[in-house]
Length: 81
Image 1 (cartoon, rainbow, N blue to C red):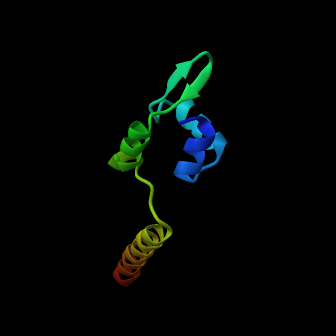
Image 2 (image 1 turned 90 degrees about the vertical axis):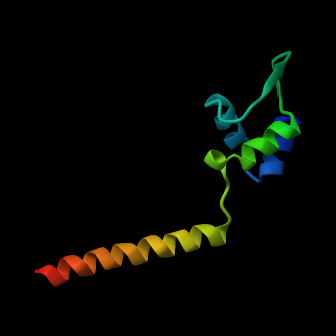
C-alpha cells in the first residue's frame, strides 16, 4: 500500500499519514525514497488499543459521561458551601 491508499483505508488525510510516519506511529517500509505499508501492519495498527480509532457515537458517549461526572463534582462542591 502507498500513502494515498493508507490515507483512504484509514479515512484520514494524507498529511495525517505523513505525521504518523514522522512520529513512527505506524509501521512503514522505504524503497527508493518511497514509503510503503503492509496491509497486515496497518490492520494491526488500527486494532492496537493505543491507536484505536473511535466512532462518533463512542466519542459522544464518552463526552456525555465526562460532562455528567463533571457536573456531579461541581454540584458536590456547591452543596458543601
